[in-house]
Image (cartoon, rainbow, N blue to C red; front, side):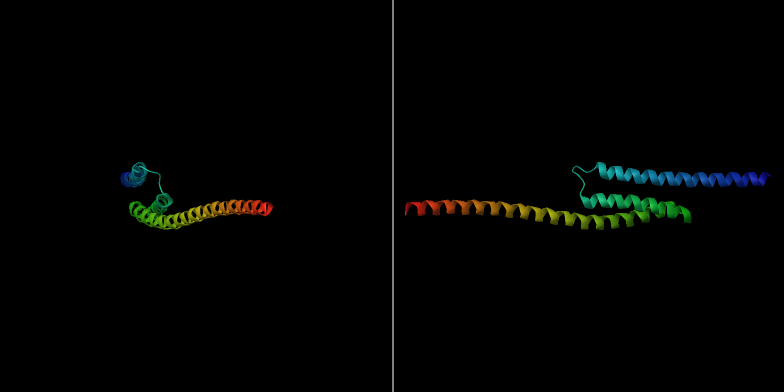
Length: 136
């Protein structure tokens, strides 16, 4: 009975350490996100938002997988790095598409203004031609 009590106490102590490590890992991940987001003086770009989101998802998934194999900290670190990298790549692609769309929209607006200017010029020339025809 005494041995079972010692084994149970040791198991509880190991479980408490594991829980403490999980909480510490989560705390430090959240603090890192707060520092990164809070340290930005201007709004985050699409690339940055995607990298942070990917890092959070990757860290959470890595922590869960790491906990299953006995190393939640390493799993969280690896998952965070992979998730942030993947998120940054996705965000970069999305941001480039947004920039391209904005440029196309600007070009469309410029073309519309030029078309309007040419229509006005055409109308002015028509009126000038009518006056000329009326005079002669």
